[in-house]
Image (cartoon, rainbow, N blue to C red):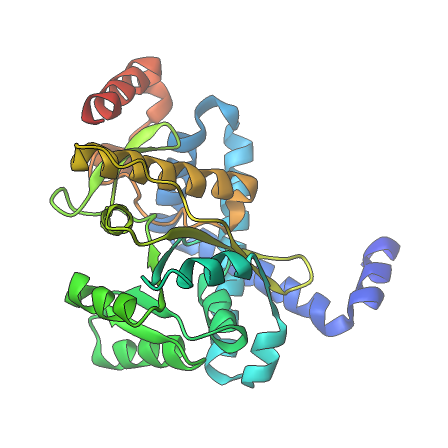
Length: 314
């Protein structure tokens, strides 16, 4: 260990340095062995950033993504087992006044979120520090895993609504004037989503929050980030504006595009903490995830086709 590294370890503590070393080692092993997710991550990064990142830069960023999710897995263990007071102390919430002002209207509120930072950690911290919120999530296929996920999400006082129950469960909590969290950055089916621009490409996105915004429910971006000292930031922004016209579909489309721009901007500020392992564009562009596909070989022609597609859907 170098003198500089040794001094840094003395400041942070030997156990913290050992923990960092273990995370990096496990992430490197995972990156080496999990060919499927490595390929998905690299394909997503090339598709999203194009020539803005060199192959070497994409490789380094992909490795940092794997490190992030190894650390997140450790933190999930904390959420299941650590004292609630410890978890609460590790969460910083900025912008809580925006949520309180929205809830003062008496219509509930929707917190749109992304798979960025440790969203599970900040949501539990919000329930412990502020008020019970509602997490909308898919019930996992294995019964034991579904029970564990529900316990995790409800341990801090929050509620969980199964995505399978859909709008009915959401509306019940909104009528009770609760904040309902909906993650909007994953691919959906053709029937279940609308096309909006995400990193310059059309991506299927759930319109639930935009539908509710048109009904008068405030929709607030609620974004998460792991900080350098190991704490977790939740940033709550003011409600996104919705211009209501005689064309409901156009209103919903515009609002959903605004949501997507906010999420993309947040991801760009710290890309290593976003879920690049997910096939975000598999509905529209499944070929980028196929074995041997080379995006760069297709060049600008495909880029132009994609932009025409998203513009044509608006």
